[in-house]
Structures are given as C-alpha cells and as structure tokens.
Image (tube, rainbow, N blue to C red):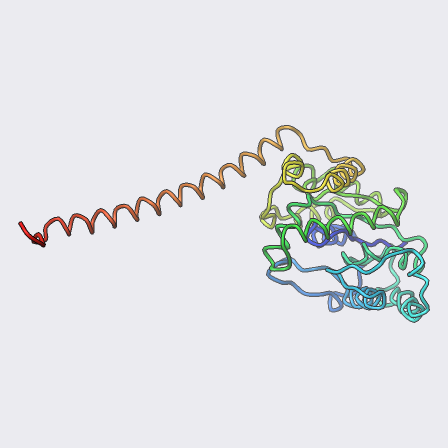
Length: 296
C-alpha cells in the first residue's frame, strides 16, 4: 500500500512524514532524500525523484507549485503525461520492496488525479494548518504576500477535497501534534496500517519539535482577518474532518500571545520616543547657556 503525505506548503508535512518514518513507513534510502535547510532544520523528508516528477507534471500542465495550472479533470488525460505516468509507476522500485511505503510532497496536493491513476490503492495524509500561519510562514521566506499565501492555501486544499474521498484521505491538523500528540500519532499509525512498538512510538514523539512553530493564529483571527468567507468555511470544514476543534482556552491563549507581541512593539516604540525627547531636551538645555543673540 502506498502512502503520500501532502497538503499546502508550510503545513507540517515534513514533521508528519518524519513521524510516519519513525513509525516504520518505508520512504527509501536516506541518500535519495532532500537534505536539511534553515527553514526545515530536521530535513524535508522528500524523495527527490518524486519531487522532480511532480515538478515535471506541473510543467506539462503549464504551471508550478506557486502558480497552479488549470487543473480540470480532462487535463490529466493529456498524451504528454503518458511518459510521466510510466516514470511514476517505475518509482515504486526506487523506494524498495518493504510495505507500506510512501513519499511526501506538498505539490502532490494539486496532482492527486495523476497519482491515483499510478497507484489506485494510494492513501493520502493531508496536513492542515491555519491559513494565516501558512501565509505568514511563506511571507517570512520571501515567497509571497499574505493575500497570495491565503489564496494559494485555498487552491491547494480545494483541489484536495475535490479530487479525493474521505476513504482515501486522513486530514491531520498541525496543532494536534503539540496538544494531543499521542492521539494524533495513533490516528496516523492506524490509517497507514503500521504496527509500531513502544520504542518506535517514543522515537516518533521525539520528532515533534514545538520550537519549530513560529507563527500562531486562532480560528477567530481567521474570521476577523478580512479573508473571504469561502476560505473560512473551507478551513472549518477541514478542521471538522480532522476532528480538530479549537477550544475557547486555545483561542484566548492565541489572543494573549498576539496581545503580548503588540505590547512589546508599543513598549519599544515608547522607548524610542522617550530617547528622542531626552536628546532634544539635552540640546535645548545646552542652548539655554549660550550668549543671547540680537538686540538686548
């Protein structure tokens, strides 16, 4: 059975694949995986051959990861995709015979019809994260504005829901790994058909690193941020399928964190203004001691 970890970029796909690998999922030789990067210090966990193939399919369709092409169902029947379909089926051997096996690539979110043709038994793990957090993470990487990031988040997740069924997918929320890791680990293990001993579970739990989460937004902030109602509705729908409900306590905590950040910015600004006033006052005092000019 094939397992693909996908979802919008910056939604925790690397962490989730790391956890699945810790539970025993076969993802091929380490030498075939993309290495670590400042934005992914624990590694990307992406098999480079699958990544290259996804880029090639997107290219044939006339787009890329950050400018999705026309994804109408009929376009996945293009003759130009047939050689790439052959390559897709050949990649199974590159991973190795052990079952279950899989790969990770956010781009696959856009290309599920292609991959379901290659592997009809494919099951997909969909990583979900608050759209504002995703957009902010992309902005910090210099990839986009917040508006563009939210629009891309919508395109990826709409395509996922339109081209897969609930029986083919498991939606897993990024926050769940920090607030109920044992529960989410068991959801993943069961969906992927893995039999993990306690030592493997312990190793997988150690791969969840809260310090790598840098952006915090609540569901309420999504509703209040001026994003379109269809984005809010899409996020709520996917949260429901993931079994994720933000509690009032979580929303309050997010608001407290946001308020604390604003207070720090205000305090910094006040300090700057006070320093400026002191400098001006010092200049004025020095001027008071100077000899008067003009007629007395």
